[in-house]
Length: 385
Image 1 (tube, one colour):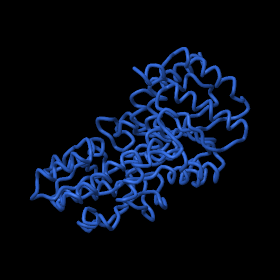
Image 2 (cartoon, helix red, strand yellow):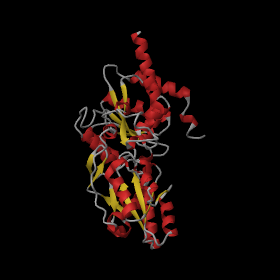
Image 3 (spheres, one colour):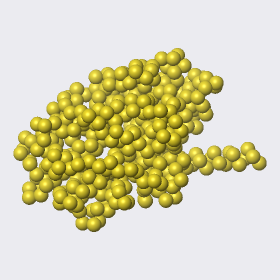
């Protein structure tokens, strides 16, 4: 299959791994954050850690839209469905994210709230058309990738005069999150981690292009390589990062040239700009309040803004004490560092958002990474024998 099979070629993978090994300097560590959860899964699924030297450390980033949504936002969505009697529509993973008191949208649905899974924003519009006597709210989440469809739904609702439809907007912005990670104090418990470069997101970059990362790379003097999701994409991106790090260069490079340009998708950007504008600040799980890191609905579309229509105040809620999602999203801890990982917290019974989403770091490690842990334990036992 074009653009898939040729990026999973074993011979080319071994050649890239050899080039990486030749580029590595053995007197230092290379700490590379894969921002996007899709890259986390690719690294675990294809065993890419086994193909690179031990002094290359992959650090999980916050690039999972379900994972970074704070508990307070889930609580607000549950409040909309239970207390305001709306039909709440959202994507499937969002329904399972634990909120306050182990409640979730799925459990609220079991208690009688009218909560429906949809595959797109236009599905939510169809629900509104089919139920003219009910208020329908689309619980919109995601990075820049899923923002244009939400903006289109707002414009379609306005054009059709569909005033029983509104959007609870929770769209967040990637470059601001990168800056927040790099600004955090480098500590082992409360802040951030030292990073040498970023493996930049794929799908987000098809929309915004590579240009928005340039100020981040320049300000913090860190290289960013935008990477595709296939294993050869990731390996080539690692090699590109190593070369920049070894030369002492920052800047932005685009490995994913088959889909990403510097300017991005200008039509999609224009659609978003028409319906949405920057928020002053937004709370992220793991990062706290981040300035200019999310979008809100413009006044021109205020009639379709659920936060205004239902006077929905935001209340910040602390994470569950047993859950380490916040530290994992910052890269401070790995999934296996969490005491409840794989025991009290599993994909079937998640305590935190990182175990819920298909792009979550804990879900990736639970599915693929436990084999690495068992291998490392076996090697340790054999070395001590």
